Structures are given as structure tokens and as C-alpha cells.
Length: 328
Image (cartoon, rainbow, N blue to C red; front, side, top):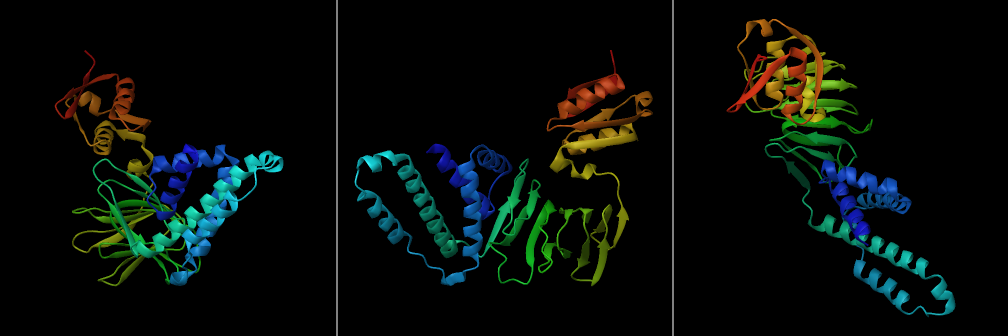
């Protein structure tokens, strides 16, 4: 029963929006490997969505339901026929348990869950969230996202962001998806975009797919973005938009950096900033070179390995920095 219990725990985390990326991968694997889990997952989702629409009047007596099921199972005679269907008995018992657990969990969730949820990350921590409308959010480190436990009865789907996040929004023409960050508001119906609202940095929205409007709530202006455009506002209230082709700002999510005929100093600065370290280049001959390559991975050592081969140099760690020098 260990897998069954783990399956239920992971489903509960996904429905509450608190599931981590590694847990989401584990849940997906369980569903793909077990047809029974896949069927139960589909049914649980349908029941959950239906129950969300019942409102506060939904008041199931989970204990009475379980007692009724238990009495029926306990009084069943153990004849040759019942012995023959023992595997089916176990299945029905487990299915009944799943149903009661779902009803009880949903009832308690509606009673005690706050009207809004807030998820935060610390240094080096990233989280993948599934929102009530099944939109997906990747939350960068030192960030937080606040959202309603469900969007039923609301005119829009509002979330509040501090820090940085990437959104893949489920399409819903009837309800806009709104991200409030600082004094700004980003509105969409369904699209993919990155919002960066870090303290002491320009607030910016980069659109990868779809269409969004980016507004300032205080100064009453709006920028409409198309894919490949980035809108920004600085601390002085100055704002605008520009095209972008460099997606290295998404390194925190996809762990990949792409360079096309870029100077070594710029490349080292971008890699250093992405991996929270610093490269020191003292040789002007190396600095004049240009690089076209892709760097992938969670560790800066993977980037160092690529650079040492590409530039034919030695990169040596010194304190918190790396010295880039000609091969000895």
C-alpha cells in the first residue's frame, strides 16, 4: 500500500498547489506506470472540480459514509464465492477508502484552508506550482506568489508576485489572468511570459508566447506586448518596451545559456551572474576572442569545462572567483 499512499499524498499536494517540481515528476511517473492510478487520478480531478463548484453549502458526512461502507464489507459472508472474488473485495475496499479520503480531505480543506495561499522560496530554491485553474508557475529563488485557493465566483484570476516567476497560463476567454507586481499589472487570457520584480532592479515582463498588456496602476499607462517583446519600468517611473532575442535571462528556469559570436568578457559576465560567481580575465589576447556555444547544467563546473576547451585556457578557482589564464 506504500505506493497507493504516496500517490494520494502527491495528488493532494498538486490539488492544493503546494507540489514541488520533483514531486510532480514522481506523480507523473506513478500515473504513467499504473493504469489504475491513471484512472483514479482522472476521477479525483473530476470530483475535485465538481466539489469546488458546490460552494460552502457542501457538507458531506464522511464518517457516516465510511461506517456504512465498513459495515457492508464486514458482514459479507466468506463463502467459496466471496473467496473467489477476494481480489475484487480488496479493490473495492481500497476504492471506497480513496473516495472517503477525498471527501474528507475536501471537506476539511474547505473548512480550514485560508481564502488565499502564499508560497515562498529561499536562497537557491525554485518551485513549480499548479494553480487552481491548472496554470503552471515556476517560482525563482527569493520570490513569493499569493493566489486564491480557487477562482470560482471571481471575475478574474488574480495572483500577486514578489520576485521572479515564469507563467504558463491556461486559456480561459471568460476570465483574465492578472499578475500584480509592485505597482504594475500584467493581464492575459492564456500565454507564456516571465515577470521579474526584484528589489532595486527594473521591473520587467518578457513575453514568449501569446499577448499581454502591462500597466502601471498609479500612472495610468499600458504597454501591449507581442512575442519577443519586453516591457519595463524603472524606479523613477520611466517605462517602455523593446524587442529581445537573447533568452539567457531565463537561465534560472531552463539552466541553459546560448551565445552567438559574443565577446569573451560579456560571456564570462553572463555565466558568472547566472551561477552567482565571478570570473577574472587578465589576458587581453583572450579578451579579444568571440564565442558561439551553449552552456547547460546546474553546476558552474560544466560551464568551466566548456570554456577551457573552447578558449584553450586554464580556469583556476581563487577564493570566491575564477581566474581565466593562458594554459601553462
